[in-house]
Amino acid sequence: MKFFLMILLFCLFILVAICTYLYFLFRKKLFADMVYIGKYLKNNIAFNKNNINELLSNSFENVSQSSKFIIKNHARVGKFCYKGGDILNDFFGSLGHGDVGFECNNLDYYLKIFDENLQKSSLEMKSKALLYFKLIIGLGLAVCIILI
Image 1 (cartoon, one colour):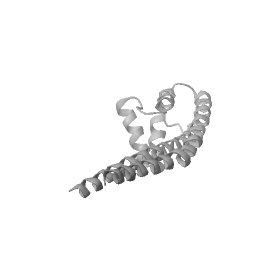
Image 2: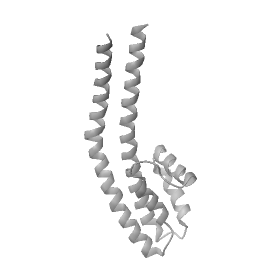
Image 3: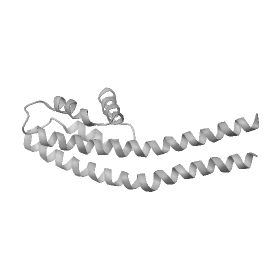
Image 4: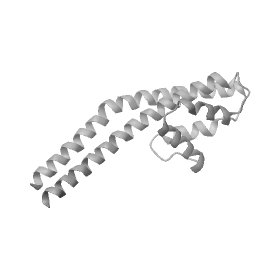
């Protein structure tokens, strides 16, 4: 029974480590997809006479499922509820409030911000995500060894 509980406890530590790693991975994917969406909108906003909502729905074809879920959840709830969500709230709130020149300048501004966040999240992915993953797994092993 004690062995079974230790295995269950270690599996819990592994689950927490995987969730922590996935948080950093999804954040990196989200900013990569936001760079793609921003470039897609910038390229198509001047040439297509479609409105912003149609262009956004067309840009979702090459976006990851996690980013689609987060962006569609934003449309339902009205705000992003996680670290870095203020930038995305401002981006989606500013779309469609000006002429083509204003929209292109606005998209350039947010593309720069999204690219900076993508670079920052890539560095965090390399350093913090793997560190936290290994640290939590090591902590789980240490707890299991102490309980023996």
